[in-house]
Length: 81
Image (cartoon, rainbow, N blue to C red; front, top):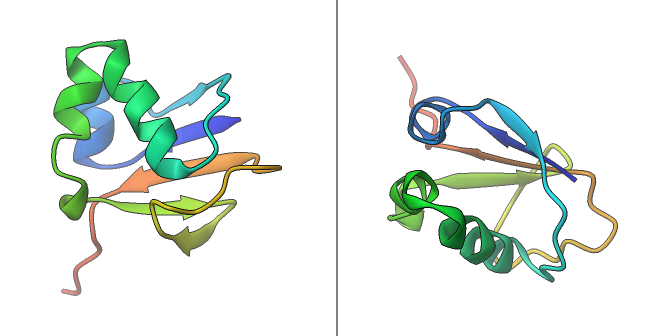
């Protein structure tokens, strides 16, 4: 699946997008797999309350299932202005 990173998440990880092979059943399990990769992922996912997630371009929760999903995107909360 494609995993996309936006704003400071992208800055911490160092790439805007990557293909990830995963057996994770949920977004939270995917995050755990990513955190285990290396320190830059751990830093990006250190505080999940500061992140939002979209699954196939729909806002979702971290307990969302990943079966059949093609894209997961991580980004900070949006603010108006």
